[in-house]
Image 1 (tube, rainbow, N blue to C red):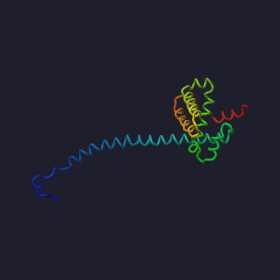
Image 2 (tube, helix red, strand yellow):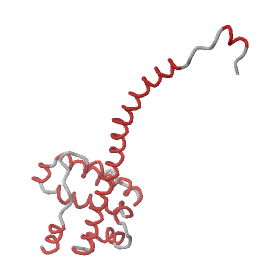
Image 3 (tube, rainbow, N blue to C red):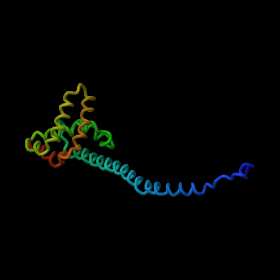
Amino acid sequence: MPMLADIDDPPRSRTRGLVIGVLVALPVAGLVLGVLMPSLVSALLGGAQSFDDRTRMEDAYMQAVCTQVISLPRDEQLCECALATEYPALDCQAPFLAWSVEQQLVYCATPEHEKAALSFCTCVTTVAEQMAKAADEDASTKAAQAYRNCQELPDAVYLPTIEALAEELAVP
């Protein structure tokens, strides 16, 4: 409703400001929707995808170790957990990491393997020492979590294959 003051001095049109605002906002919104959002979505989904892939591989590996090449002195704690759960890679992380450190210590005990993967073997040895120094099992489990950092090193070595573990059983 116009007022008496508006008759002498009418308000300015807001059209010019609205057009300038739209012209500034459209490129910014296009940049956000066209570049930033897809990269953010791919980063989030890519991280989840790699986690899913890793857990599937760990599930299959634990199931193979515990059903095909089980050796009670070596695999007892891992297989107690892995065979009792539906998703061992999620539910049995602590025993799997401790078991992995033990297996990698065996690998790194060979001088030529240690020379080929020096930083990885140094990391694994350090984690094993921290696990040995731990006061109780909970502290040892917490120390074993550092093994994930060793896996990220450029010279990291995969766990032994199922065939290699089977050969260990066959050799007296």
